Image (cartoon, rainbow, N blue to C red; front, side):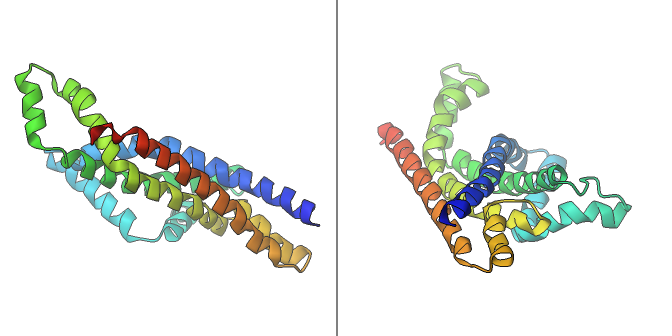
Amino acid sequence: MFATVTLSLLEGFGGTLKLFVLTLLFALPLGLLISFGSMSKVSFIRVPIRFLIWVIRGTPLMLQLLVVYYGPGIIFGNNIWGSRDTGRFLAALFSFVVNYSCYFSEIFRGGIQSIPVGQYEAGQVLGMTRGQIFRQVILLQVIKRIVPPISNEIITLVKDTSLARVIAVYEIIWKGQAFIKSAGIIWPLFYTGVFYLLFSGLLTLLFGLIEKKLNYFR
């Protein structure tokens, strides 16, 4: 029984890992773009983006999942995602990417704005373009400053993937719950915590190493 449960949970963890990796792949660069928009001096760009960030950060991710998946069907009478596993996964991925890109954007914005203005001015005096200043002077300092808060969000993402089950996306918690109905046992549900702990522990070690590598700014 233990081997059967482990194999089933490993299958579910594959879905969790897929959602986790794809969310990071799209949310990190999108978050950087959103941060530039939120800092824009053009009001018709800055205001809508800041409003979006406010809405996303102010509402639960579970609610966003439900609205994204069921909303089009309720409003337009047509579920654009479909009822199959692929459609549900895409709806979950879209929700996670939008949610986390907004959180990441605020971390990026804070890191960029924390750099003293004098460093920009010094770069201009040396004849560097704005792009060169950002890439060669600002970016590495920003990365060092945002690693701790970004790592916290990424570890939170590991656990938040369990929310995808509200729209029937098959991930590890779903697999654990299935044994309650099929076999009348609950321990597989608690066993899922081991997978989360191990994966979060590995990420913690990884980010610890990254922070040590960035200590050259001290």
